[in-house]
Amino acid sequence: MKYESKRFKDGQVTAKIIEGGDIHIKIRGNSYEDLFKAAAIKEAWDAENATNKTAVAKLTIFCLIGQRSDRRFSKGESFDLKVICKFINDMKFDSVAILHPHSPISLALIDNSEKISHVDYVEKAFKHIGNPVLVSPDAGAYKTTHEIAEKLNADLVPSNKVRV
View 1 (cartoon, rainbow, N blue to C red):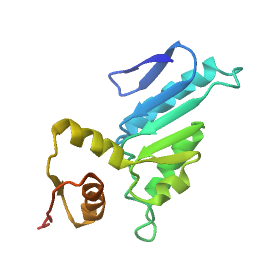
View 2 (view 1 turned 90 degrees about the vertical axis):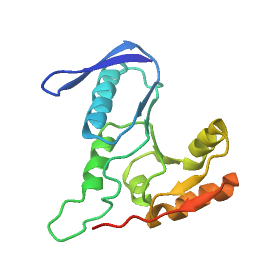
View 3 (view 1 turned 60 degrees about the horizontal axis):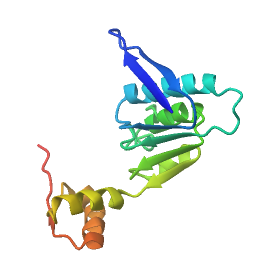
């Protein structure tokens, strides 16, 4: 499946299907514009495949926006991840793959979702670069980075940030 998308000067995103068939949209996913681009592509694809009940639509998100907002943090505050996941669910993909979701809440809120292992991606880069040292950027990332270092038999340097 081939498509093209463009962004107008006012920020509007539009898409056009060039060639039909199954669709696999891959987005970084760390902006609302990425989600709107996926929605525009999926809407155009849905129109082209309205009578094709065997066509499959997949979405892969490499960095899901809002995933750290996996609950209401205070009274009266929005549950941002829930809003984002509803938007994704309304697109009705057959499957949604997310690279290393921040919490299991993301997978629970998105229909037909699955986790993509972060280890596979790091391992590929690790082998390409040639045994680099892994650095954990802060205490929150230490567990994940340590897990990767263990699986790859890599050296690990832990670090912590100090907020002033």
